Length: 321
Picture 1 (cartoon, one colour):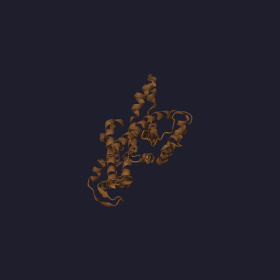
Picture 2 (cartoon, rainbow, N blue to C red; picture 1 turned 180 degrees about the vertical axis):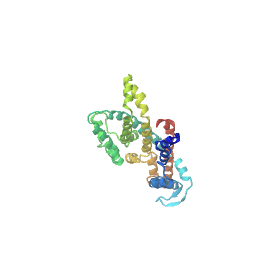
Picture 3 (cartoon, rainbow, N blue to C red; picture 1 turned 90 degrees about the horizontal axis):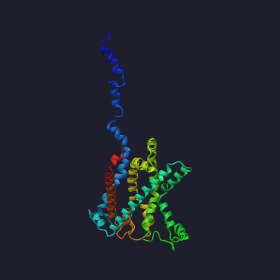
Picture 4 (cartoon, rainbow, N blue to C red; picture 1 turned 30 degrees about the vertical axis):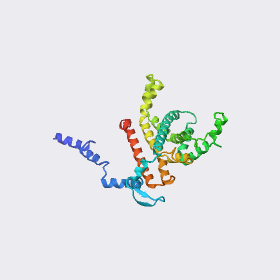
């Protein structure tokens, strides 16, 4: 005679959700701590060697005193920070940094958003145009900046040649020598080299928007502006968050553009913190490596603070869901 237990026991052993299956599933994906550390060792070593060690050495240098030739002379305590904060040109440099970062990032985001929506549409030659957009991103920043130095030249630059030929100006403009035009000229270059990356971030964001949602809104009678404002823009917020944060970091630390375009001008009139740091060590009267290192520490602190405040303001956890 077959009992109920005799019938149910095989079922418990053979069903996918039985005890044996649960035991097998519980073991899947588990890795011991030593094995996990072994796999992560190359990445950890890279982070320590490329990030933490240089950061420690930078902080150590910021609290040290060096000769004009760069020889270590002993500890300086916090004097280097005091000297940097009391430097007479620091307010101008800070103002230039804010103008440079805000203008380049804001203009880049707006233009990239418009161009990305154009490049996701199907038109003849779209692939060629997308390839052409990548060129400024692939080229060296020094080469691109030097190209604009030639374009901006007041004697034989193409821009002045076109403007005078069209009778828009009476005499050539010194774009990089006239204080009225220098910062604006650098911002143009900063936007030019920042567009490719940002455009493709927005293209990826637009491609991720479900087409059925847009089609349903169109069927419901939503206008193109309503569809963009209520569907496209909200769904692009994660991509916009990424583009804004990364561009802020890149633009803040953009040394080649500012140095190449502004190298001919004396002093710190058009410098940002990144070139100010370099000039303190190699081109100023002080030639003080300790002050330069202190400025580098302040740069890292400022960019981290700006990014954290931005993420807090836009509520990044909510936006990336």
